[in-house]
Length: 464
Image (cartoon, rainbow, N blue to C red):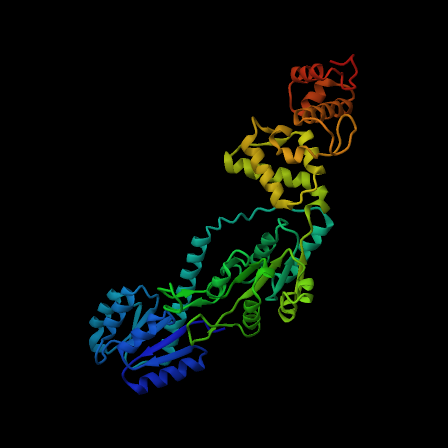
């Protein structure tokens, strides 16, 4: 596909303008033309021109003055200057003023086309670097391999759809990792080296949504003091991830449908339509089919988005993965805080984490583990390092009570600790020394805790 660039030809000779414009339009570019410098500056002031092919010698404002004015206004247009052989020194002066390249007359169409392709590559690299800097992605490629069959199926679907250009709809509760799934689809696609632009549709003020998505020209509305490229154009050649797609206003839903079908965007205040080559991945924790029935979401857009559906299961349905996830997060967190450090999990704390329902899913678990890594004394996370809202509804206890036993937090922690010690002694066949080793505490600490709780923990008193 031809790079999405708007070309402006600036030359006072009609024949040169018309022949070059016709050739570039046949090559697939969007082309406009003007006959003088004043008109060129006016066109570029809106911020709509990607590349200007500009003659140096013109009546009135020269090509060099055009470059200087445009650069002084902070307009991001790339200049290719046209010059006669005898005026190469003038072309060099234009490049010092901010032009990128120059071509000597007579113009050869294929040479112009080659220069434009080179500029497209450079602009693409620059735009991608700008996006990466603004996002400060710092993306980690290490990931946990799930064992739960539901998540294995999700991963299989990701591997199937990623190499295609199909639109994908990701569903799942809040905190299940829909954004991670979207990034995985992008990384496994042929667009992996192009931008990945995440957008939270629910976080953009409604009066700014259209400008954010489609961009705007200078002066398009009050406060638009310079042109801005929209998110859809920033994602050109890459993937745009529309999180919380159910929050998108109905008016914008219609325009998004047009983008999906025609691959075109029109910035606010512009008369020019821009071609975009983007893949759309959307996500929601809402039931879009119910929203369609209530008239809150366009049915045609829903069908377009859900060409391929990937569902991310909640963490409570994958309890067998909680221990592995916790260990994975602990080691990652420990490494971030202090390289080379290892942190383990106390069995009683592990029992609590596995029994909790995790309404906030993986995101909530990640927050709990990060908090524990901050609070932990030494290298073992205990019940004291977990949030009280989790420990107070933890399952089971030494007394065999319900998941919401009465008593203070201290009482509940004591019961959990005694239960863990008793189970460790029983598993060790009554060998307290072995039980202490399995719990990661000293033998004297185990004796002290048993004495504190007033019991032997089911141990064989003949053992040490």
